[in-house]
View 1: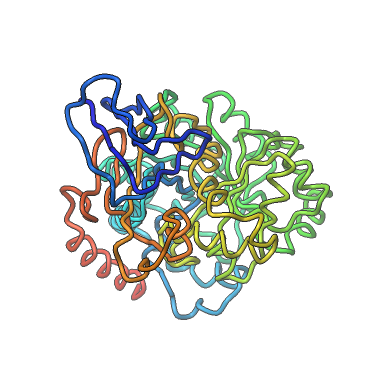
View 2: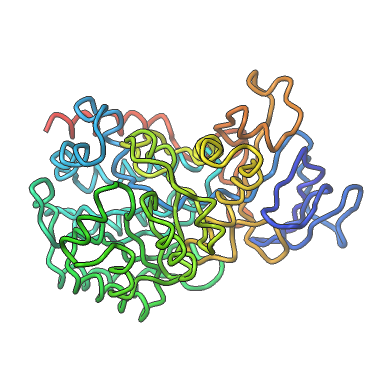
Amino acid sequence: MRLWIRDPLALFTANDHQALGGLVIEDNLIVELLAAGATPASPVDETFDAREHVVLPGLVNTHQHFHQTLTRAWGPAVNMSVLDWLPTLYPLWSRLTPEHLMLASRLALAELLLSGCTTSADHHYLFPAGLEQAIDIQIDAVRELGMRATLCRGSINLAAAHNSVCVQSAEAILADSQRLAEQYHERSDGAQIRIALAPSSPFSVTRELMRDSSELARKHDLRLHTHLGETPDEQQASIRRFGMRSIDYLKSVGWLGPQTWLAHGIHFNQIEIASLGRAGVGICHCPSSNMRLGSGICRALQLEQEGATIGLGVDGAASNDTCNMLLEARQALLLQRLRYGAEQITPHKVLGWATRGSARLLGRSDIGQIAPGKQADLALFKLDELRFSGSHDPLAALLLCGADRADRVMIGGRWRVIDGQIEGFDLERLKADHRQAALQLAGG
């Protein structure tokens, strides 16, 4: 099957290619980019007129917590910083059931998909009794929506006052991590499911588990992920516990390398930024969550200039409180301009973080770009709402005018969203069931 998406209003390739005449897709791959006025090199089976659409590579979300869609805008935690926010919410999260997690995951994925996101990473570290198969549940949800995902097998093996019900032994964590890697991890281009290993933070697991996770990741060709640099007190905590700052600790346990990406990455000094860059560590910038919790502003441009890869993530729906990748890109544009100015933080740069940069964080070169040989993962947006009237630069208008919903989304050459609706998916039923589950969880 050959499809020509022709003559788009605008097209962002996330590389130096130009394709004003559109692109040709054959089965699941992009096979040709066309200059303005050009036609495909060989006949096509179908043509899609994209004159009203801005075309992007499918957006890639590199940090989230699907389960948190059940605790959005939780009243007792609305005005808290992260250090108080977590203990307030853990008692609710510790009551999660498999049914809760499936509903939360389906809703998060549907919201992401409708925003133009085709690939997501989720960091799940809650495995209370009865929820030992949490990652399997999430994989089922990903497959139902037809999306791609890197599911991060989180871990906590050191108890704190607020999370003791979620602690597992290192042996159980490593055994399940190996099972997931062997059962689900797809290494080839076009993979739908990949697995990563992801202690909740370096402070919530033992040194031995950090090191063993790194070794297991190397054995199975997995990525490594954790939260780091989110709060200013982390460095003193690292010195007290490990006798060294956090980046030195990562190096000591085999984590300081291109296989690792970190969520947040706010509170690092210039020496640490340079170390992260030299090692090729990735940073997932989570602007909405960082602003919502008052955590600070990631020095994204300095990290990138030193060699780190920058991607974007919506973080948890209880600290954002949405699962919308295009709105997250807009937030990144505005927040990073506060630090670096409008001239250096352009819509093109931020869209690059949301596509090609995020794909690199997940170790993927097959997605995040529009180029021959890449997967046909696309997000198409119309600029026909009131908010866009009078706009001139279509790509800039997506972010500056606040686009938040895709008209069409394609994954692997197959339309998953048409006319703003997920194909074959009962969204109204999902919303009703999800609301009921959120009330049940909050009521205990």
